[in-house]
Length: 231
Image 1 (spheres, rainbow, N blue to C red):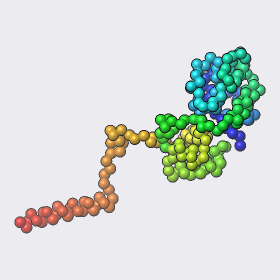
Image 2 (image 1 turned 60 degrees about the vertical axis):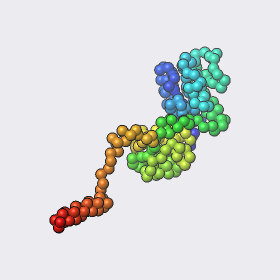
Image 3 (image 1 turned 135 degrees about the vertical axis):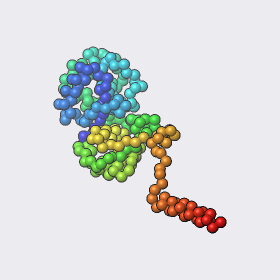
């Protein structure tokens, strides 16, 4: 099974984005990695317009930059790559495969959200019904995770530690469940007092305990009435 990697194309000009999307329909089965578009913070590679106002601080750790530029002399940082403006299919495949080799050579440093304030860390996840996923998500490991999610809610850390997923695989997995409309997301943050009262009003007593309590109250009133009569 081919390794999956994320690529951000958010900072491409409209014309370049269209060219990329059209060529990727042909390049998808020819590249070393399977490339999926993603948010920049999860990207292994950022495909950037040469005029994109993007600072290095905005990039996730170890994210590779591929600049689409008309000039081969376009100033780029060390390790960045350049793709011609009117790039063709061989150009695109070549630069993506070079990026793939760079990624394979990298140390497996943690890439992705590591801040507990990130929304991914603030939610729990379960599924509303069983679903059989296809392609990369049909392996035994994902089947086990789905089985757990039918019984209980899990969080992001559970997916990484007990589910054995990488940050990117976990993100992709949740996105696939969301796309199939089976993902149930709940916030782990405590509700303010006024909201808690609104959404979780005091429950009315019910069941056997409630019945016994009512009988005890009735007997107590009856006994009090009998004592009043005998006075």
